[in-house]
Picture 1 (tube, rainbow, N blue to C red):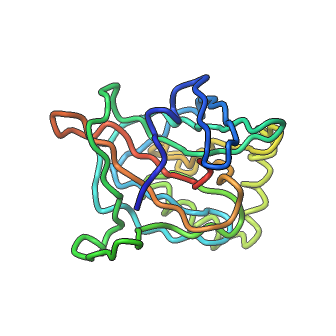
Picture 2: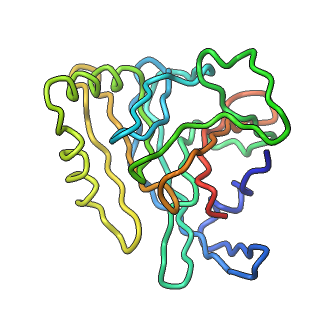
Length: 208
Protein backbone atom coordinates (compact mmCIF):
# COMPACT_ATOMS: atom_id res chain seq x y z
CA UNK A 1 0.00 0.00 0.00
CA UNK A 2 1.34 3.44 -0.93
CA UNK A 3 1.42 6.06 1.79
CA UNK A 4 1.82 9.80 2.08
CA UNK A 5 5.27 11.38 1.64
CA UNK A 6 5.70 11.76 5.39
CA UNK A 7 8.96 13.72 5.16
CA UNK A 8 7.14 16.37 3.12
CA UNK A 9 3.99 16.19 5.23
CA UNK A 10 5.99 17.03 8.36
CA UNK A 11 7.87 19.92 6.73
CA UNK A 12 6.16 23.08 7.94
CA UNK A 13 5.19 25.31 5.02
CA UNK A 14 5.67 22.63 2.36
CA UNK A 15 3.10 22.43 -0.42
CA UNK A 16 1.68 19.23 -1.86
CA UNK A 17 -0.40 19.03 -5.04
CA UNK A 18 -2.70 16.07 -5.58
CA UNK A 19 -3.73 14.44 -8.87
CA UNK A 20 -6.66 16.85 -9.22
CA UNK A 21 -4.49 19.92 -8.80
CA UNK A 22 -5.56 20.72 -5.24
CA UNK A 23 -2.73 22.38 -3.34
CA UNK A 24 -2.27 21.70 0.37
CA UNK A 25 0.02 23.78 2.56
CA UNK A 26 1.37 21.74 5.45
CA UNK A 27 1.49 23.05 8.99
CA UNK A 28 3.13 21.06 11.80
CA UNK A 29 1.61 21.46 15.27
CA UNK A 30 3.11 20.10 18.52
CA UNK A 31 0.56 18.30 20.71
CA UNK A 32 2.74 17.78 23.77
CA UNK A 33 4.50 14.60 24.89
CA UNK A 34 3.25 11.04 24.95
CA UNK A 35 4.24 9.39 28.23
CA UNK A 36 4.98 5.72 27.54
CA UNK A 37 5.97 3.87 30.73
CA UNK A 38 5.81 0.40 29.13
CA UNK A 39 6.81 1.25 25.54
CA UNK A 40 3.77 -0.67 24.23
CA UNK A 41 1.93 1.81 22.04
CA UNK A 42 -1.73 1.70 21.05
CA UNK A 43 -3.39 3.66 18.23
CA UNK A 44 -7.18 3.69 18.22
CA UNK A 45 -10.41 5.66 18.14
CA UNK A 46 -10.80 6.21 21.89
CA UNK A 47 -14.41 7.39 21.73
CA UNK A 48 -16.39 4.63 20.01
CA UNK A 49 -14.06 1.95 18.62
CA UNK A 50 -11.69 1.34 21.50
CA UNK A 51 -9.47 -1.63 20.65
CA UNK A 52 -6.65 -1.60 23.16
CA UNK A 53 -4.29 -3.89 21.25
CA UNK A 54 -0.73 -2.52 21.15
CA UNK A 55 1.57 -2.59 18.16
CA UNK A 56 3.83 -5.63 18.00
CA UNK A 57 6.91 -3.38 17.81
CA UNK A 58 7.82 -1.86 21.17
CA UNK A 59 9.71 1.34 21.89
CA UNK A 60 11.93 2.33 24.79
CA UNK A 61 9.84 3.59 27.71
CA UNK A 62 9.98 7.37 27.98
CA UNK A 63 8.44 10.65 26.88
CA UNK A 64 8.10 11.45 23.19
CA UNK A 65 6.79 14.50 21.29
CA UNK A 66 3.58 14.07 19.31
CA UNK A 67 3.11 16.15 16.17
CA UNK A 68 0.10 16.75 13.93
CA UNK A 69 0.64 17.39 10.23
CA UNK A 70 -2.29 19.61 9.23
CA UNK A 71 -3.12 20.23 5.59
CA UNK A 72 -4.43 23.71 4.86
CA UNK A 73 -6.83 23.35 1.94
CA UNK A 74 -8.12 26.81 1.23
CA UNK A 75 -10.25 27.68 4.26
CA UNK A 76 -10.33 24.04 5.39
CA UNK A 77 -7.79 22.37 7.68
CA UNK A 78 -7.44 18.61 8.11
CA UNK A 79 -5.08 16.44 10.16
CA UNK A 80 -3.28 14.54 7.42
CA UNK A 81 -0.95 12.55 9.70
CA UNK A 82 -0.01 12.24 13.35
CA UNK A 83 3.49 11.34 14.55
CA UNK A 84 5.18 10.09 17.70
CA UNK A 85 8.75 11.32 17.21
CA UNK A 86 11.22 8.89 18.78
CA UNK A 87 14.47 10.54 17.64
CA UNK A 88 15.78 13.35 15.46
CA UNK A 89 17.33 10.88 12.99
CA UNK A 90 16.06 11.11 9.41
CA UNK A 91 13.97 8.16 8.25
CA UNK A 92 15.68 5.81 5.81
CA UNK A 93 12.78 3.38 5.36
CA UNK A 94 9.14 2.91 6.34
CA UNK A 95 7.44 -0.26 7.50
CA UNK A 96 3.72 -0.76 8.06
CA UNK A 97 2.94 -1.15 11.75
CA UNK A 98 1.40 -4.45 12.82
CA UNK A 99 -0.63 -4.97 15.95
CA UNK A 100 0.13 -7.83 18.33
CA UNK A 101 -1.08 -11.05 16.77
CA UNK A 102 -0.43 -9.87 13.21
CA UNK A 103 3.31 -10.57 13.18
CA UNK A 104 3.04 -13.55 10.80
CA UNK A 105 0.11 -12.35 8.69
CA UNK A 106 0.83 -12.08 4.96
CA UNK A 107 -0.99 -9.25 3.20
CA UNK A 108 -2.21 -9.16 -0.37
CA UNK A 109 -1.07 -6.24 -2.53
CA UNK A 110 -4.10 -4.03 -1.77
CA UNK A 111 -4.43 -4.97 1.93
CA UNK A 112 -3.09 -3.07 4.93
CA UNK A 113 -3.08 -3.20 8.72
CA UNK A 114 -5.21 -0.47 10.25
CA UNK A 115 -7.54 0.63 13.01
CA UNK A 116 -11.17 1.75 12.56
CA UNK A 117 -12.39 5.26 13.36
CA UNK A 118 -16.11 5.85 13.93
CA UNK A 119 -16.04 9.17 15.83
CA UNK A 120 -13.63 11.17 13.67
CA UNK A 121 -10.86 10.91 16.28
CA UNK A 122 -7.60 8.96 16.47
CA UNK A 123 -5.08 8.71 19.29
CA UNK A 124 -1.80 7.42 20.65
CA UNK A 125 -1.47 5.97 24.14
CA UNK A 126 0.63 3.52 26.13
CA UNK A 127 -0.81 0.24 27.42
CA UNK A 128 -0.66 1.66 30.96
CA UNK A 129 -2.91 4.51 29.87
CA UNK A 130 -5.12 1.98 28.09
CA UNK A 131 -5.77 0.13 31.33
CA UNK A 132 -6.78 3.42 32.96
CA UNK A 133 -8.99 4.31 29.98
CA UNK A 134 -10.84 1.01 30.24
CA UNK A 135 -11.34 1.56 33.97
CA UNK A 136 -12.76 5.03 33.30
CA UNK A 137 -15.28 3.62 30.82
CA UNK A 138 -16.25 0.83 33.23
CA UNK A 139 -17.01 3.37 35.97
CA UNK A 140 -18.59 5.95 33.66
CA UNK A 141 -20.28 4.90 30.42
CA UNK A 142 -20.34 8.55 29.33
CA UNK A 143 -16.59 9.06 29.83
CA UNK A 144 -16.25 9.78 26.11
CA UNK A 145 -18.06 13.07 26.75
CA UNK A 146 -15.23 14.17 29.04
CA UNK A 147 -12.70 13.40 26.31
CA UNK A 148 -14.79 15.42 23.87
CA UNK A 149 -14.73 18.35 26.31
CA UNK A 150 -10.93 18.19 26.33
CA UNK A 151 -10.90 18.17 22.53
CA UNK A 152 -13.13 21.25 22.41
CA UNK A 153 -10.56 23.13 24.49
CA UNK A 154 -8.16 22.91 21.52
CA UNK A 155 -10.55 23.43 18.62
CA UNK A 156 -9.35 24.97 15.35
CA UNK A 157 -11.35 25.61 12.18
CA UNK A 158 -11.75 21.98 11.10
CA UNK A 159 -9.81 19.96 13.65
CA UNK A 160 -9.09 19.59 17.34
CA UNK A 161 -6.75 17.80 19.70
CA UNK A 162 -6.22 17.04 23.40
CA UNK A 163 -3.55 15.66 25.71
CA UNK A 164 -5.15 14.00 28.75
CA UNK A 165 -3.43 12.34 31.73
CA UNK A 166 -5.05 9.00 32.58
CA UNK A 167 -2.76 7.25 35.08
CA UNK A 168 -1.60 9.42 37.98
CA UNK A 169 1.04 6.97 39.22
CA UNK A 170 2.99 6.73 35.96
CA UNK A 171 1.85 9.90 34.20
CA UNK A 172 0.63 7.83 31.25
CA UNK A 173 -1.64 9.87 29.01
CA UNK A 174 -3.58 9.82 25.78
CA UNK A 175 -3.02 12.22 22.89
CA UNK A 176 -6.15 12.62 20.75
CA UNK A 177 -6.61 14.37 17.40
CA UNK A 178 -9.13 14.69 14.61
CA UNK A 179 -8.71 12.00 11.94
CA UNK A 180 -8.46 13.67 8.55
CA UNK A 181 -11.85 13.77 6.85
CA UNK A 182 -13.39 11.74 9.68
CA UNK A 183 -14.37 8.07 9.90
CA UNK A 184 -12.48 5.34 8.09
CA UNK A 185 -9.73 2.79 8.55
CA UNK A 186 -6.20 4.13 8.86
CA UNK A 187 -2.75 2.57 8.65
CA UNK A 188 0.29 3.41 10.75
CA UNK A 189 3.97 3.14 9.83
CA UNK A 190 7.25 2.82 11.70
CA UNK A 191 10.04 5.01 10.43
CA UNK A 192 13.53 3.50 10.74
CA UNK A 193 16.82 5.40 10.69
CA UNK A 194 19.73 4.23 8.55
CA UNK A 195 21.26 2.39 11.54
CA UNK A 196 18.06 0.39 12.05
CA UNK A 197 16.85 2.28 15.12
CA UNK A 198 13.28 3.53 15.39
CA UNK A 199 12.85 7.20 14.48
CA UNK A 200 9.07 7.67 14.59
CA UNK A 201 5.58 6.22 14.38
CA UNK A 202 3.10 7.84 11.97
CA UNK A 203 -0.61 7.31 11.35
CA UNK A 204 -1.73 8.32 7.85
CA UNK A 205 -5.30 9.66 7.65
CA UNK A 206 -5.49 9.45 3.84
CA UNK A 207 -5.85 13.20 3.27
CA UNK A 208 -2.86 13.58 0.95
